Figure (cartoon, rainbow, N blue to C red):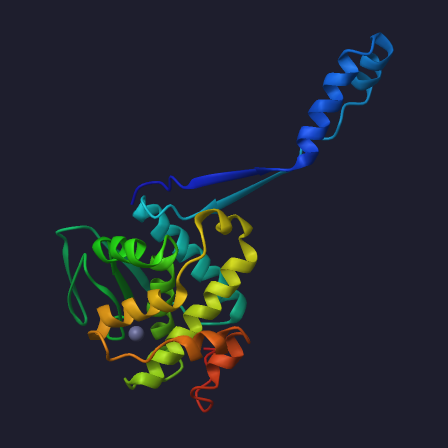
Length: 234
Ligand SMILES: [Zn+2]
């Protein structure tokens, strides 16, 4: 895997500009003022480095989403898959659940791995915004969380709970990464619907609105779909 070449967004505060302007004024006000500024230099300018997905460099975005999902999972005591796999155009990879391709977006319980295809990532960007592939990956990760919790059936309630977990992840990311506003607000509901259609065929998944509403109450609300099988602590 190539080294990440992420879009680094450097947010510089107004304090930097103010400091530069003051320095400039000091230089024009005579030797005493200049000496004072040399003996007492201003503190280093505060810099906040933020990273955001590009929607174009899909391999870098894939790494970034993994990092964010990993962080949320650890802080929330939620399970992770044993491996994340990214498939390029034309690639075919055997899995415990049949072959994966660049059009795949799936979690395979037989090998506890997530498989994501770049063609599907591009399609999600085009339809639902730059963050949509991450929301879809979070849905696939959610199936790994469910598997570890012993939720092994299939059906609308399982998909709705996975949507809830993915939406809770997105709420967390949006809260912790303020630079995301620079790439726009994603269409969370349509992204989840499109990923569901890619997994199971259109029309087989419930509308994710209720799941997204539940997710705003935190990951605990997502456990309420199957209260006898809590999602955390596995
Ligand atoms: Zn699903």
